[in-house]
Length: 394
Image 1 (cartoon, rainbow, N blue to C red):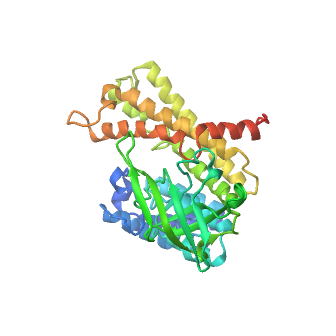
Image 2: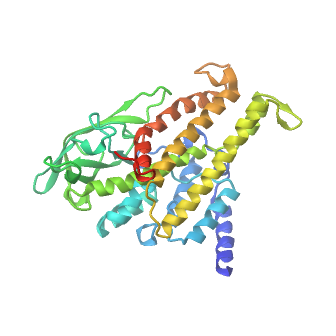
Image 3: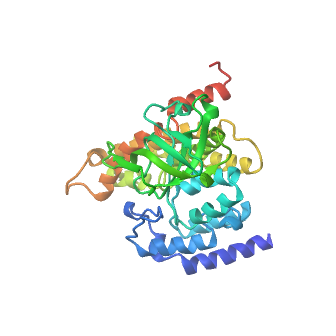
């Protein structure tokens, strides 16, 4: 305990000295720290914060230090997260590399690949995107047809991906490709390559929310280095399934919503619906806000418990599908409740009669509908749960 208290004291001192003032305020949409070669920093202190945290490996605090991570124990990381919350610090880096690719590389990549890619992920030097879904292989991901041919000293990739989040802003892609057309699952490989490679084209797809985070991505005679094949040839499906677990865990976390699922809703409701004796004046809205906060808190505790069980060696099983489904529904419900609280002010698209926050709420509500599709549709998750948890037949 004495060592942990010493760690807390040192961590608190370091954070006070290195976390800039603006980073202790709510994060505006335009300051999201994605990192990467194409990153632009409207707030220079965001880059300063990333450099400081990345330099200590604290963007991935429990990754091994030899790969750029923080090398912290579970108890040390818990203290770090507590101290970050205490000063209301923003995340130093939001990264598909940290959430999805990094854990897969730690498990399946060779030593050279780990040393090449993991430190750059930790420092936010490379922004990654995911090349999984295809126009003809949606829910049945294993039916993907992007072809990867062995050309001796390199692979040649031809095909198309869709719903590639931020492909137009990413530096590298981790992609599933077909290296054997005679079989289905056993003919898939896991390949990494630079998005600036000749033959790669990303086209943004406009969403109902007005944003374009998704892209359709085309590969035309793309030459990929053989050294960037992760795992064994034709064994990529195993890696793909594990990475999907990490992705679903990440999406399920959206169920906590911004500010912890229920935080901020009460104040918003008091402002827009009315306040009486310190309470939300509308009993129905008050009940809905309390229920959202309770459900979010219970969900967060369950995620934390399961994460600790996983680190202790217990199998996740179908938990990632359960969490992805519930987190999706919780996030959608939260956004719907915000719109209900805002009333007509939550239905604006443009104009001076709506605040920036109100317009953002409208778009977030529309965007949340996509949660039930990305990372494996709700129908796919329910099928997994029905078979693996309930034991129902195919």
